[in-house]
Amino acid sequence: MIIIKKAILLLSLSVFLTACGQDQKESAASEITAGKAHPVLKAHTAEFERKVYKVTEGVHVAVGFGLANSIMIEGDDGIIIVDVMESREAAESVLEAFRRITDKPVKALIYTHNHADHILGGKGFVPSGDVDVYAHESTNTYINRVVHHLRPVIGDRSSRMFGNLLEKNDTGLINAGIGPALNAGHGGGTPTLIRPTKTFADDLEVEISGVRIQLVHAPGETNDQLFVYLPDHDVLMPGDNIYKAFPNLYTIRGTLYRDVLKWTQSLDKMRELKPEYLVPSHTRPLIGRQQVNETLTAYRDAIQFVHDQTIRGMNQGLTEDQLVEAVQLPEPLASHPYLQELYGTVEWSVRSIFNGYLGWFDGDAATLSKAPEKERGENMLALLGEEKVIFEARSALEQGKNRWALELVNYLLFAKPDHPEGKAIKVQAMRSLGLASMNPNGRNYYLTQALELEGHTIDPEVMTSEKLALIKTFPIGNFIQAMTVALNPEKSAGINKTLSFDFTDADEQYSLHVRSGIAEFIHGEVADADIRVSVTADDWVELVLGEKSFTVALTSGSLSVEGGITELPSLVSFLSLFESAQ
Image 1 (tube, rainbow, N blue to C red):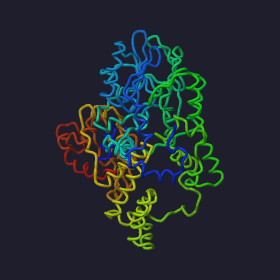
Image 2: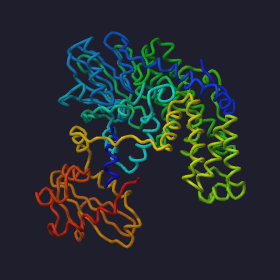
Image 3: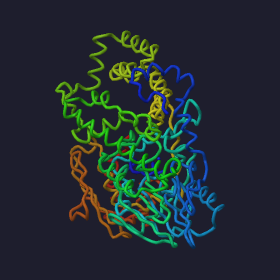
Image 4: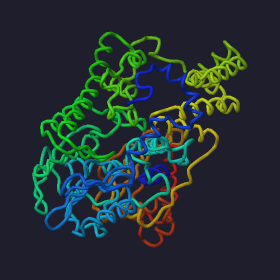
């Protein structure tokens, strides 16, 4: 059950070298490394000056208070907040700044999409939680997916991508590309959630506090993305479908395939409005009809170019690696200020599009069934010898060929994972690549993994009553279903047992049938289940998080096991089959 605990705690996420090839980028690495941060990335920090911008009469945006922006629309007798930050504390600081402009009450919240930095600060704006919340009809489902099979690995990769282990300095975290930092990963913050109450499918027109508001479903960075348009103000709020950085068509923390053609279509819907003001949910607002239109057009053109040229290359028989070399943005897109690789990259996008259409196989039979990593490492050492591999890797480092050093030393580590000199070379290569990177996500990932290899870790997150209360708002069925991927196949070999749950407060029943390495999730009870438990959803969450003792719960009556306390060992034994992914 540890996997569930970890899953829940993870709630709390012109141009230098643009036209250069990879070899040119690496040759400049030593010069950049000496300065500790890529100059373009460092200059980008100015984009996140902590400030409330007046866009036009009645519309203000808070930039730099957290990873995302929060936007205030002022109406006749109240205000509407678009996106509510990543924590209660971040939202409170934004509201304090907004209160210098107006003291009108909050009449409604609007979520542009489900990402944590846009939805987990709600109670900083409305402590009672009693407020209308507008969102796409699928947003609540995506919020509930916080408790799902991949959350532990996504959490670990997100932590690296946002540099949660890094100090905020020139050798560590510079900025997060779309905001100063994910503050929830640097000093914490209290996640809160007010669930959507007003949802729609395609579009919705509503008047709140005298302000006409159009909400339009616009898939892009997420499937539930929407944009907000104020026709009387001529203001467009595109959510995360555009910001001042090349878009994250693929995110290295891991995600389902993002349909980039739908993203361009959503941008086309925005272009049709020809707005005077563009207020993204990351980076600063843009003002001027011509400039806004030109920027929206360039953004969608860059996305389509990468998509179309990747498909064109695929149809010509190019492999994924060959496509990365072939697909490069042309001028004037390559030098456009909104298309610098300060969040997503063309390379990652090309790889994602290739895999989204064709899957992992690159078409070369040589890669159809690779030898295991350990065997490849042992074969390389047998061919060259350990000393030669180390010598060549060190030589590559001295020449600034850090990517080759990293690839070469990995063969040594495939065969000998704890080899001290091999690990030291890998750390040095990753650190050099990170310090030279203009992309903050790549930089943070390299530098964080280097620290991890040296033994550095993030302190475990402390459970608080507020976090526990938030966890209890998620569907209990998600918790049970997430257990299926935590089953240890060795421990469960030869086992054929069923555990049925009756969650008495929710009137919901679920079962897990374990049979030789498989845990089948079943909606409902199983008549001949080997173990039956009755418990409230809240009590079960506290039990699996270690906030309550199973023995105490059983003796107090908050947990009921059919057969009484004598069946507790059977329950504990069954649950021991499930363990952490790490």
